[in-house]
Image (cartoon, rainbow, N blue to C red; front, side, top):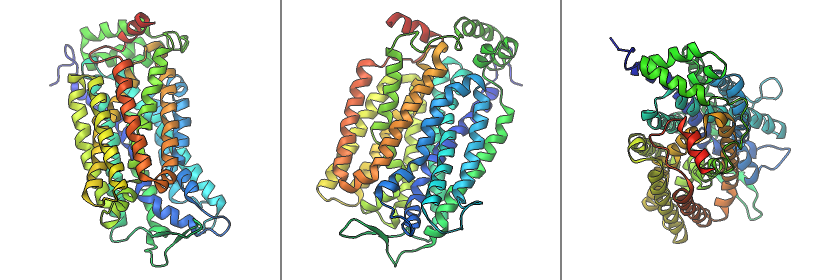
Length: 484
């Protein structure tokens, strides 16, 4: 029998954090599902008769969910404070579910099935934006929920598990897309001398008519499961203190930390939890700017240009089979390197991993640029892309979320996290929506740019980001008051 009186129950802690981590899985699933579906989707709208679909439109459509992510991230602080962390995740689950069904069947009620036009394109994008709002909420609230539940000595590991779930969600959807594709091939997109796109008459059209729909619709199943499980997890102790429910907060803390430690943590929370009345710049401008720049660099280094367009990139690099199998392999490598971060973040600290990851990503990005400039195809550019992604997964992927969830003082955390996450999604959208046109212009230029930004990210972390390893969330107030 588990002793919860003196030591707390690890089983209880891991059970409730596992449910929250499922939100990270859906985050990864929703944002990466486009990687397998985007080429069939492009070919589908290329057959529209009332407008000419082009690369700019495709970049916007492929990234439209990110507009919702910006909105979801921006409002996450309001929802986290007013609805609570748990109820905000419930809302995210509903949005995931509705978006999956709507993206599968965007013609619902208003349009003729299988007949692309501008109005249908708008409807599809709106469904993707709806899911993006869910992703934006989950991206901010899941690590916040975990950070507010977890003891300080394992908080970095548990919050990093959220990033593991994001990458695992991407791997799952890569594999699901691969299974859905089966023996079918992505359509061949042609471009004439005037730059007008068309679908080759020799293309396999199954993905154009059906495949992309099944890929988007598959998300409905994990979304429903996530929503169901959220009825079995508690509100976070810090949120319960904010709404004056100290007894419930103590009960949860006791189950997690044991009786003696629970009272100590509760006293610390009560001493610092004035989230509803504190102004955003109470602890100075620096903490907000550093939080924003962490988010900006995580996206500006260009990782989602790889994650969202992986099959297309691998195909252009000379990979066989349309790049789908190489995308699955990359997903497995990403999982392994995310585990590296999980098992080292509380041992080595946040800053060393971010600096090492930035340098490794720069090497990978410059190698891809070199391969393009020298017209090298095959294993070298494929490995360079995988190296680039792998170093992200052991650094900026999980560690950025760890820092954003813990770097802000209790009194401004909800609002500050919302601002940082909103900037993250804004730059995610900028990178992802511009990548198709940028890659079409020059892969060498695109990856050289990302490599330069990786170097700048390493310098930023070295000079300005504080180390938070081993500090409690309540210690953040002391850290920033001293530096103010």
